[in-house]
Image (tube, rainbow, N blue to C red; front, side, top):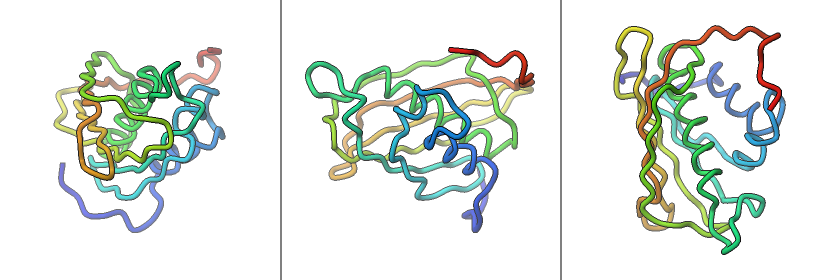
Amino acid sequence: MEGGPLQETQEWQKWLEDLSKGAISHELEVITLKGMQVVHGQKGLVCCNLVIPDCVSDKDGNWHVGAITTLIDTVGAAAIFSSTGQLKASVDFNISYYSTAKIQEEVEIEAKVIGHKGRLSSVVVEIRRKNNGELIALGKQWMSSINIVPSHLSKI
């Protein structure tokens, strides 16, 4: 998707930052996104850096795949939000894991909107090692428009 760099904090960026700080989310997002920084954004494209926090490790000291999944879903949603101005829910989600990453390792996350079809939007999210660009995970997802009703929010 085309668009110039964002000069001011946009609604999508505030949403993503609020999630990472726990202002509007549940504990899962707070833990997973802890310390993430948005480094670039434009319509349909969101780039972030993250030093993988200790609290998202598996038993071997690697970045837990569940935390990777949550991060891909959330940053992908932010990219679509930057393109459409709407929050959307995942309806099809596929992740390929290419490598492990250790706790305290720095990674780059790039979410790029591929296109829109009716109420559906498609996004691809890549996670790479910051020091050498090696691909860690690649997420592809379709998201659909949702109507958020505060009284029906999940309690999970």
